[in-house]
Image (cartoon, rainbow over all chains, first blue to last red; front, side, top):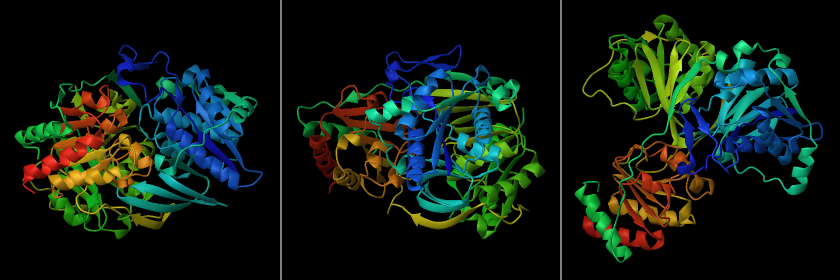
Length: 268
Length: 323
């Protein structure tokens, strides 16, 4: 059994809005000083899903974590290795930069084909930076595999997988043949927190690096030049910040003042 | 410039969903004279096209196999409408359907999709899609280098065209094909009474409430306002802690609500949460943190411990309503 986790390193989404800055000239986010990038939380949950299956799957079960990114993305790979994944793959090439979801999926698919014997791929339901939520599905389409998104629970058996998905007003369980791609949601549960010995052990695990050429990809088909969706403007939206705090010496007076305002505005 | 737009509609208990009608309204504006078409799939589809105001042509299949959404089956049907219409723009809701159809259809058609858009516009003939990103901290506007341009659109991004009707006939789409995924179980998690998307007042509890029991007080606020208009929501943190059901989650990965009054109790106002409620007419915060992000979005606020303020608020609301 060979499972793959796709992991992305992103700016910490808990960066306070006051520290969140963008560079309008390059349509990119300026890293906030003193705040380290993190493994996208949904990808951590995807890793948890894969690792639980590996642990139930016996000795020949293997988890490989793949990340497309610069050398700094090794930190995200190392975190999933510390959680218990066996090997890492870093897809690092200048040609991959500034791509869209499509080119990202294309590069990830090439790496998964390169690994050869993969049974299932686990992605976060969306990356908590661009929030598109489409790489998992595009990856499945690139590979020609079945897919199920927004998983809350996964039960894996020889040759097939059943996935409980979160719908708008309920849940559904779907079954599909392997190989398949799944995206995992926060309802799945918290990812494990690696302890020091596991972090030390992760440092010794292999991380293989591939360039576009090594994956047989033409630089013109990936990254910015292969992108179909082009970002033209990134900006910080203006928010109304004319909050009026309710006066009063006691909670009762403040509450009464609020109720008067809401009635005057015909909101209640 | 005129555009030929295809809207991928959805049925809600046999009628075109409210988001479908919103998309059609948006489409007929952006089309500026071009053709607007709609697809509807599932029981009642061919009847439901009649209410699709804004559409000039309709494609439907009443095959009940479409009632439970399976992406691969829907895509085959939609592709047949795409072949007939050759749209340069395709719109679908950012729903459980759109989240899957958007990416998969874009791949099948050799093009791209912009997900979770809040505005679609025409700038000198080319389609631009604007969407929140970085949990709502930023907005991004995209252009497309391939055609058709596909966008999934957030609920309530367009206003429905009132008092108008849709096409009287529809072209029949093929019955459902084989699917690679088999639905083996479904479970409803619908909350009783008013749904948060339909409520004019939403009372939301956050992580700062401290425990599940405190949601009882949120429900008391809602009943003091009136259960015919108020419903209770929860932040993702509160849902992840198991304090309230996922069906009530407001935020980027939950539901988008746009009530007249959004009362956020012990909600810090993280951007991923605000992405689900920032379209509310009036936001009111109750929070002990003077620096909380919620104040950047609030019209009114009370700084303090909700444990003291909420009981007082319930009492005042009851007094005001004469109960």
